[in-house]
Length: 475
Ligand code: NAP
Image (cartoon, rainbow, N blue to C red; front, side, top):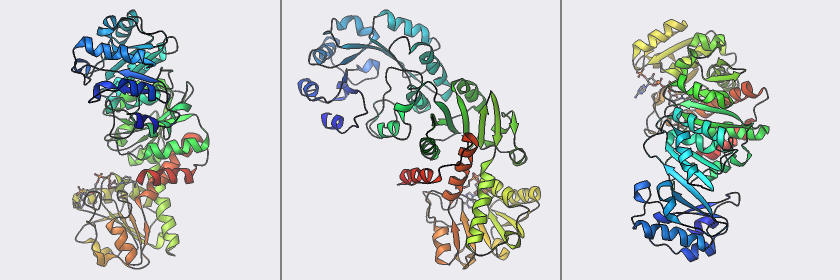
């Protein structure tokens, strides 16, 4: 535990010693060897911790820790009276944990904690849905500048409360020392808390942005957009939100300076109905991937379409195949990505064909866009100059699959794979080997993110910083 503490960055202000999770506790060594203030916690099993010791012995460990110089002790509200006196200078954190839900009366709970006379009051409740975080943030917003207060929503859905604690003046926020070493569900690794989310720079005026998705855990958008805000020197933070009900999410979070959202699977269509204004393109395609919120109004856009078109046009130029209007394009797939790309390319090519496993879907999309449609078996006959894979074939974990037979790949053609996990798919590797010009799904992802950043900030996107953050995230 001491080694782990000393390995933490200096900007970690205080370390919680979870004595209840240690097999044997050497309090003297821990307290004399600490390199920064510590909180001694010895949570009993009944309050979600690991201590099975009799109550008297459990509390005696906390008292001893205080005598040895622990800066704070954390005691559960129902045991606070039994803890007895602590040496002057030891802060008493009186806590209440709810591992099931977010109770409706947080103010009432806080009043009960305050009646026990804490130096710091701590409420840790569980968010079953992202909307459960809003009442916890409102409590912080109302009370944390008057009393030393910790309020946290545990669980994956509660992650935003851990970062936004800084915006609302919470006494502290907990982070894990590393991914996989969380002491409670939803803790953010300290490296991300300080690095990607810039916790120490978040304050009352920090603007909030985020990505609305389900699932969201593997989204690369937080890394890319936080790096952009940092490079632009903006007081803004971008968070991942795992959202089920988009309307309820917007109503819950808009009061917290929410200025913009990236929208992805499965909410792009639903978001169109929730914006006050939508650009023509987003309305026509029926999908909003970007929301900008100003003066209480939501404005919906689609940056996927323009970004995909830009990536194809650049590749066609690189391949010396300009103009695009002379080129035959084949789009594989008829889902969300295919729709965005087909919209971008229609009327710009010398012929557009949509091929899909479920040929009916290809026909419907083709009819809507004035494009040809065919089955996967028929696609080699198209002999495209530009081939865009918009299926998920080749995506992790089935990385050895390719959506097209190798003999369709020719020197000089453009091959664009929307899949970005992995970046170099089997399709792209085979296309390169055949002498084709390739475009990765990452290029598209970065271009649409850069366009979002420009919409939100009105400034040129810092592409280099965004690219570096993405590369670091992808290892
Ligand atoms: P989607 O709406 O679910 O569509 C999936 C498409 O893949 C459908 O056309 C489906 O055909 C086809 N498909 C799935 N499994 C197949 C298989 N075994 N053989 C042949 N076809 C198959 O998904 P999406 O949102 O369009 O995403 C598609 C891919 O693009 C994903 O890999 C996604 O990660 C990637 N993407 C990348 C970006 C980026 O920024 N680079 C953005 C969006 C999406 P059926 O109609 O027959 O089911």
